[in-house]
Image 1 (cartoon, rainbow, N blue to C red):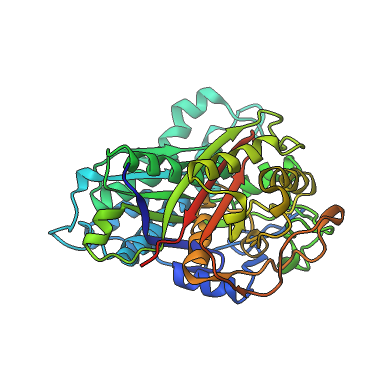
Image 2: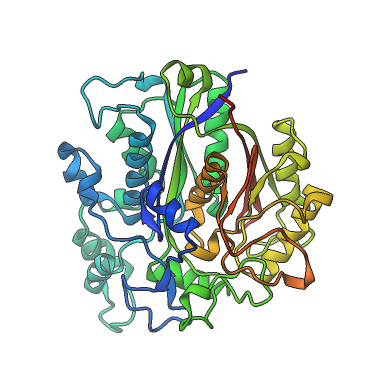
Length: 436
């Protein structure tokens, strides 16, 4: 069976645009969670989140494609920026950069996880005002919406908000014509997308794939949905940097963020032949479903553990081989307790020994953009640096975890990253160091 390696990494996050900027800020212990600035959050209980630094999308696409950026929602922009970063990092020359690509586009796949893309309220609201009921201006007249309201939207309006448009734009820009798919399973989307790309190359259906996910939840609709299900921290508006506390006794809820991470996976012999920089080998993937509750994970952690155990078995590795774990670590007490239970089930006696890097304390919950954390696991393995768990100071319920508030140097041969999402979907990935 073909071996699969990581040869390119692209990240955009609240800590920086580009994998290099993100990683340096992460290891420096910086936090990207602040009072929201892209809109006025004053009417919301939680007014903090992780927003990516400013960028111009036109700088990340070919000049001939800039007109298409008019139909890119924020989520799409994030994916396009991360893809550009990953391609430039990999040394692969796509049609975005040259007339003579150094790969066969028909053998290059694309799997990008996405979330529920929120419409721009100003754009939608302007159209809806024309469809107010004649009898009550606070009511929407659906007949009037059909006659007048919809006509106020551009004919291509819907193309900005379909989840599959993240992968559509990336494949068009780079002319990737291999197996392509979009996965929308909330926070687990990125890991599942990476897992599917992994299997595609293993089956010989592609030589390369760009995979991961991106999402923006720092908008009024995203904030409203998460507020209604009680997941956000509303007590740290004056202390944004301390808002997300994974596995900590003072955890009071999570904070939303925007961003994503994309990996370029490549068949090992092909990567070696072209002299590619190889970050790590992807050796294990597994997923599971607990179906416990739409808003909370199953408390025993059995299903979460099943994904990790399955990924380790797929990799033919044991818990004692793992050098770093990048967990979900939302900073929501019920979720963290369930995850801790799953970690104990999956790792047994090693649960307290394996170094853990809980990254959401610095970037918030990127949801489908959790590919940034998968990329973080690869970078930790490659660099031998374990980013700090800046807001994990006293473990919940007196439990023990191997965490540190400082970046640690370590010899790491195996990295595991795991995630769960609303609705009970779990996924885990195992990366191994490739020796020279």
